Amino acid sequence: MNIAFLCVLVAGVLPVVCAGIAKWGFHGFDNHNPREWLARQTGFRARANAAQSNSFEAFPFFAIGVLLATLAQADTQRIDLYALVFILSRVGFVGAYLADRASLRSAFWVLGFISAVGLYACALGF
Image (cartoon, rainbow, N blue to C red; front, top):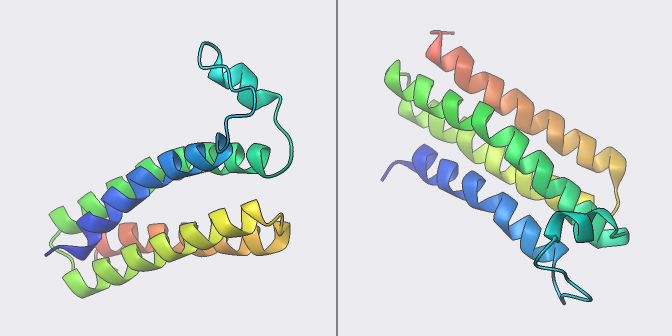
């Protein structure tokens, strides 16, 4: 089993989970204009929606890093480690976002970014 590829799947599903959290309970949810409805939300719903957006933004950089490191035939254990750290940091990021812990959220974001950069370093042979 390729752990890094499984992590790409998890990273791809994470924004959908955030969207579900943002829409949890559907208080006056307007499925005809869901983005307008989400834009009016506050509190955890607004933060979950922001986490959704950030998760979509982070996904391509991470997924391409996994693919490039794999194509470069970098050490599989190292790729898996960076991928797992990325996923754990993203889950921590979402949790910190929902809990309104801005500094902790930023720390998780940085850790995830560094792990994604590590994948590119693997692909380049560093």
